[in-house]
Length: 459
Ligand code: SAH
Image 1 (cartoon, rainbow, N blue to C red):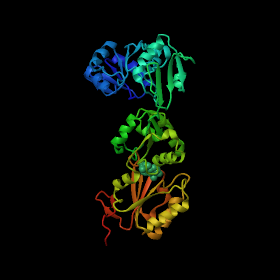
Image 2: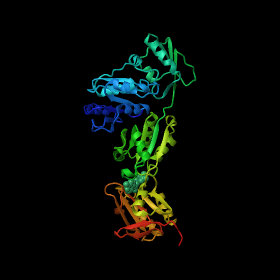
Image 3: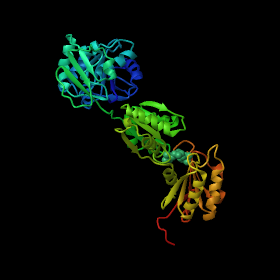
Image 4: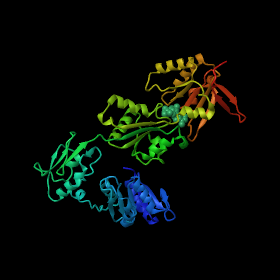
């Protein structure tokens, strides 16, 4: 279901709208321009606005008379299976009436709103009331193969018919349907292709289609977040990531937050996959680019190793972001203008011997190097050792760029010769670029420098 829109006509409805928003944190409040302030979106024409929302499948909660909604939407009522929920809420919060969309969750939405307002929803759908289930609209994970028979079947039950259940589904066995071993009618839950009838409803279990996107916020500032990432964040029902990153995207995203300070990335990845397998739209939030020393590979690693059947049908999407080394390079000129490589100096996930070997080989190959995770509170000697190795192959005058807190408050970019690099120059918020033998400095009139690596390798 898309996030609902709460639409109001006057300032006096703002309080009720906000009370409803607590129960529906994804919902936006639309207010009539000129009459209502402090809303998410202002509109000018009520009728056109609700018709537009209805046509694009957005659930509508109108804090207004039911009649206004009915009159506005009447010309559009053609397909009850496709229409979104439309709910009228009395301006004083004393009544909640689901008007349309009984098959797409209106009764459940009305009950959620009623609960928030501490009243009872005015549910008028007899099947829902009597049996606590809408046979025509099974929950995600099930498909009714003969929906045209559902209406007559429900009417028969209301008139006193009983049901035999073949197979099982919790939403059916926990309902108030009149189950009897010798029921006059049958409900069957099966994978087999059985033809239903007016006295035999057949439900097929379906894999729930959920979505998992892995996004990167860029190194810090909001303007480095791609429009695709913003759109994914806005549409997410659930957000998974470190608190710091979730705080950073808080203004774009209203989904449920699953904060973690958990350093075990694989656990976080598994949690995200499990949420998506429940049919949710989950976004895993990393900093920088999500595929560079970040969550995307953790997700694929868990997917590959554990291969749960429930994850098979998931839509997985990785949205690229700006990585710290790109932002660092842009801030100082163009040091990555020729061949380069990235090495994480963290020996938590790989042995230090491998890191030393890579630094030595990259230095011999005359790559520009980007060092991620250069120094932490626990890892203090690694950068000094890296410098020692580099000095076997590189001149002590090689330019080194130290970029800290890029795009965040306290951003600093310093350039110094390799000979002067020490581990106190860096921390976990620093990315370091080590020039190749071709990397050059240009003195600037303001006292600063540009650093660049030429495209041409000759002479
Ligand atoms: N996925 C991230 C990298 C995560 S590893 C990316 O693509 O940028 C974490 C390391 O990235 C940090 O230790 C630091 O070296 C670097 N980093 C991340 N954000 C940074 C920032 N805003 N400024 C400087 N370095 C940053």
